[in-house]
Length: 40
Image: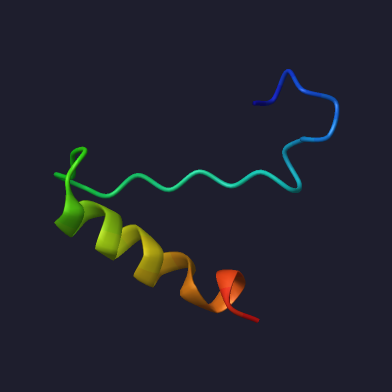
């Protein structure tokens, strides 16, 4: 995504859930991590 003109290091965030995978519990933790930013 950093190669797209509308994204840069200031407006693109990356979060890695330790021990996570592509499953519902991991996605739930990621949404909880970003909830304040997603639902302003």
